[in-house]
Length: 223
Image (cartoon, rainbow, N blue to C red):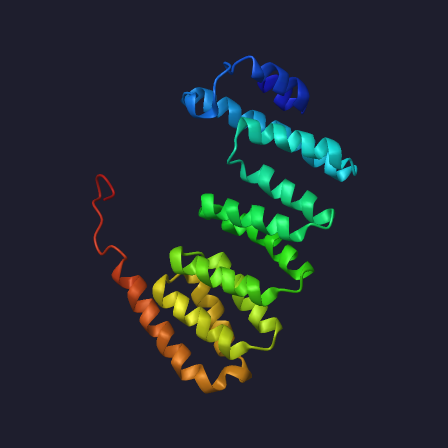
């Protein structure tokens, strides 16, 4: 399959790789077989994406179904299927699929979020997206999600609410990227009433990050 991969001969790679997978259920595959199956799902996604770009939704659906047969948790296949559903006028079905993907693999929320946002925008339900993302942040930390919410609030001329949200999230899970954005927002005239509060938050965040920074390091092993 490596040769077909290099040549981007996806169907030949799939046909060859299939021979390495015994006829058994997904849950019964060993580690190496799972690795092969994930590669075959990737090849199927390449074919599905090409079909979508050419407007052949039937073929795209077929290849995405094939991808899921190899790897039922394939995030890329889920995103492509959501794109297909959205293009055919089914944003709610796409949202249901994407939110299921995020529930299964929250670490990929940053990858899925742009498509999810477009689905909610088509439905003109940005408030519902905001509510969903707040629920996500109650269970997980994600600077990408926080910054997306902040940008949405800023576009709605809600700078104070954006600064408050970002400050609250940085207290919970401080990151340099989030702190830098908070500092930018604090310079906005529309949040002048909370500027002192924002600066105080930043001071605490810097101290908090400093507490987790190691003071000593072994010259031999680096610990």
